[in-house]
Length: 512
Image (cartoon, rainbow, N blue to C red; front, side):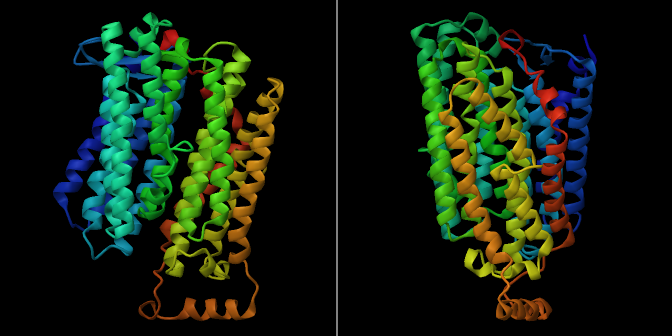
């Protein structure tokens, strides 16, 4: 038995956030709330970091299992890590640490006199625990439980703003999430009746082209597409992401939608890969392509800054779905390997960091301006140059300009499409990039406005007493966190080999 499978690291990654949620609830309104949660986020980051180092040190192409309570499949609960899941865990640990730092400052400032902080932290840690458990789940029913924890926590976090728009968005988010979970639950009932187990490895070993397996795959796909918000099932995402508190918007776009995408990839390429077809892969690719164009155009037309970023998420998710037709075509069978999978994995990481940075920078700009209208951002670069810089760097990554991580991801997509002869996806990717440049420069052109009257008004506003303006001072911590995430997107562009090497250890069907 190796160090990773025999250690308590894997269950600790799940249970530490649960402990943090309990403690956050018990201490309530306390000046130590922020420091305590920062300590928990640092501990979680170190746990995941140690787990990642152990996994990479063992240099195995096999997945690592931890059997909880000594009861293995099909009766017990197993935790499992492979190349893909360890990468998602590492991403979760990094973003949890940075966004927790941001949140501690955010809720001690704007909402210091309200009870939003009291409600935020327990829900935050429940969400992190659900994400961590999902990325290590080896059982279809445990995945369902994790999806429910994530969905309920995320919907409650969206509702924290308390206004009518936020409550409506949260309710819509909750109902769509429950509908998606219902599809998934029906699917695992079919799988259990057909295979007599819900362990992913055992299902993968016995799956075939049977009708029940195909029906289950269809139900799983529909249910998870609802949660991912792939076009045209995206209707719930823009209002939810736009009306949530800034740190919630960042985690929703960076990680929460990726959780369902992670599960879909697992089932599509590993667990039920034999039930998928080239035609179905092309359909998913077409929906992704439509999402790229539609989401980018809606982002360009948006008048609210956070709504623009939310529609950008709809577009960016579409790029990842090009994985399905490109992998299927190039491999001939359903297998999560090759250049298409590298592009998808790299895109997931690049988008998570860039979108988190963009949402945090946007939240800072809105606090500084006191208004979320894009038109009100004229000349804001005079007062908030660093946050505008972060927004620009994140945007450059999203549209795919060098030397950002987004450039590497889109380059991998383009080369895969060309090598496979599917040139039409090249047109989609390039068109999406041009539309992305349009909505990015729409914001930046206003932010860097050189109108003398605007610049003078910004200078006056920056020296006015806080009580005399509707804006809120942006702390150095909040700006620094956003800047760190933006710099990470650039660093990933210079060190693509590290991410690609980890993604190459993603296990095949027999290694789930």
